[in-house]
Length: 463
Image (tube, rainbow, N blue to C red):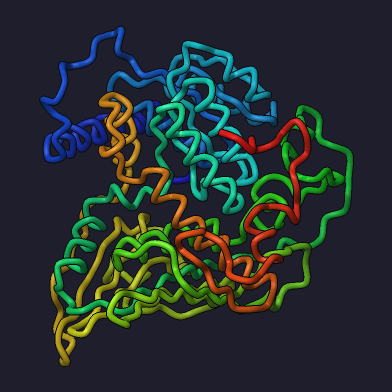
């Protein structure tokens, strides 16, 4: 269910009861149950959510269904959205939160324990670093950075200020996905040499929208933040900002970062040695800057002369299924015409894993005859929120399923592929220095120098 979908108080409470029972069962199997006393009123976790139009309101609903967790503040630069979400929370019977349009004011509130970030991508890292500096833990949506430099700095900030920082690659908390990856890593399909990520999402053209006055109630200067100033247009605002380089990372960084992260997780690899990406903005004549068709390849040079690869593909138009992903066999859920998931290829078979909307269902095919192997249709990845609360309470970085260190690597793959596409050439990457070898232009893109930062919305140089 999307954040914009209507949900009644009765539905919300029923869903909350199911989630609470599920979290209790999950917590018992993960070691959370019994690891601490039942929290009292003084142990309540107080959250603030930044960016609440879509994904951020999912945060509000799901965190509010975890026992002894309360959303006490909302922040959004669109006062119209704030009013709507206050009304939605009232319908759900949730306590009325404080509201802010400027996140800097929110961060002055010492009663807030943690900040959840679901703003446009160009704001993710800056809010996260400011929150760490303010002594608050962070749940930051994917991708945690708009460029390589940002997530590197966020990683440093989390370490310096001793904060818990969870990345919104929630499949890492899915029972089915964790089971599937365990099969891959334990040799079910033999020696795994290739992981493929699919991001086939049917998207309509965004058309052309001219400059117009900023809508009443919208704090557009705050929305722009660190990005260059541009006249307001509808396409550079709600959701369609994804398709402009100054704010988003295309569908590779929007949806695809999940599948890139899963591919890397299954292969057990970190930074690649070589990256290439080709594609374009095909078919549609509109304002979109990012590609709507993209093929990426990441090469890993391993000890002993072996190699592994990750392939990743974006398609925005009509497409086919692959390995039953998106079909009823793997629990197509509400994917509709979309095909989102991963395929792992090994010497003795292959395994396909659907996305969170399918409950991360998976299926293996084994041997030369491709006989069906293990399969699962367990629940999806909603417990990622509970995992964050567990780590917040324990103060143990090792409790996080998606720590900032893993987020930095997966996001770097996204940024490398986008840089390769934009420059039109293959990039040779040094995993030790985290620099593209002999390519000043590519390193400038990874550093965000092509866009720059508008003061005072600047990522700190020294942390």
